[in-house]
Amino acid sequence: MKIRLIPALLAVMLAILSVFARAPQSRRPQNRPPNIVIIFADDLGYADIGSYGATEYVTPNLDRMAAEGMRMTDFYAAQAVCSASRAALLTGCYPNRIGIRGALDHKSSYGLNRDEMTFAELVKQRGYATAMFGKWHLGHHPQFLPTRHGFDEYYGLPYSNDMWPRHPLNPNYYPDLPLIENERTIRLDPDQTQLTTRYTERSIAFIKKNKDRPFLLYLAHSMPHVPLFVSDKFKGKTKRGLFGDVIEEIDWSVGQVLDALKQHNLDEQTLVIFTSDNGPWLSYGDHAGSAKPLREGKGTAFDGGVREPFIARWPGRIPAGAVSHAPAMTIDIMPTIARLTGARLPKNRIIDGRDIWYLLTSRRGVKEPHEALYFYWGAELHAVRSGKWKLHLPHKYRSIESPGADGKPGRDGVGTIGLSLFDLENDMGETTDVSDKNPQVVRRLMTFVERARDDLGDDLTKRAGKNIRPAERME
Ligand code: MG
Image (tube, rainbow, N blue to C red; front, side, top):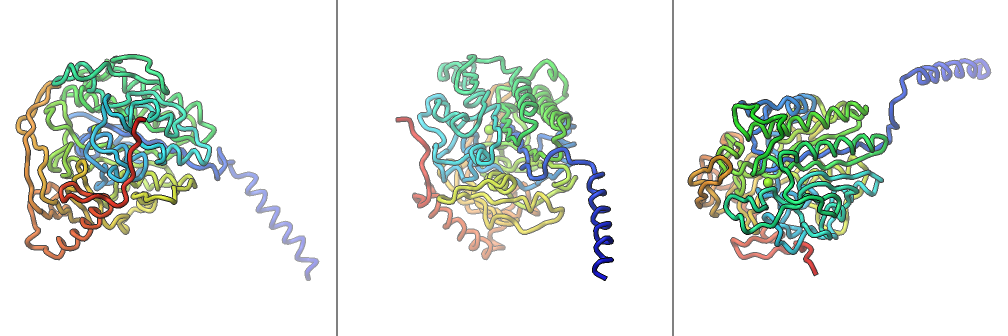
């Protein structure tokens, strides 16, 4: 019996082997970790791309990316201003945890601490090629530049593109704006009409050069932060004016990156994420974007300041056309990259973000990654969100008295809000305070507030955080 079975078993095994031999070989080994591409816009509002409500111009590439991947409707930047927001994206920590607040400039004598781990340093554990093209804004001195934080290559502006002698309000304050390659200034006051194009060309060249090994690309556009500039390819194309032209050029850039991935057969091995650092700078009127129907914009803890479009695409892994309403934040990107690449997060310190891969791969609502999300302005704790509820603590905020036009800012006023509870599911514009009707919700959210004050501090209540780490200062 046994003797007769052996030839039969051998025949079955041979048949199985022959099927595998005929199966098309996958182009690359399955154990290769995925490429990561993060495209980060500057001052892009919630309603500034097609799939989030823009109507006066078109964003076909971002729309395609959303149709082929997932859109999150309740995704947040960690703080409504450039440097703080970027610190969170790069490290997975609240900016207050690591001492980066507000927006750095040419006089800042501090930057991202070398002891913090960026997502570039994270994937270096796994031998990734890494590059950053665009706006850095975490310290402009050589010791703070991207090349000192895990990026093999860097090309871009060290801070905002309005920090130059052509600033509309402070022309004598800023020196010439440096364009930096790795650690060397290669031009002063570069032609800003070419920034989006140059960042894109560098990105495409980087993808091509590293197509046979895992890579991480961080493309941080300087636009649509003012002053707005666009190349001739897009000048005068939209009825929204210069702002619309600029967004269409960013959309073109996204299309170029997606095309390069396809051309090199990397589509199914690459996670691409698109989001922005903070909401629209409304003081600039027609040169600012829109966060409608959200309240306020950049510089505030209202959703217009911090809620952003978020699109993630990875064909075959992220379901096409999926939409998630779970509240998440840029701090979650770093832990998610750690999971996908098999790299290890630092264990000896607090990392605030959560791995949200399970959200990106599910079609339906699943458990929210955070019990609460915190919204600071500088060192002041202004609001907390838990589930559909957002509680504002009493604070003053930037409001627009009269918007500017044609690249000139208008006048900012000061708004005041008392303790207010908003139901974002039914009132995403944060218009109606329902704290009186929901005292138990207010009490629950106040426990999170107390936890954050203790942990991260709060200038409004004169609390020092127990678990904060310093930025790095110049000697
Ligand atoms: Mg910004």
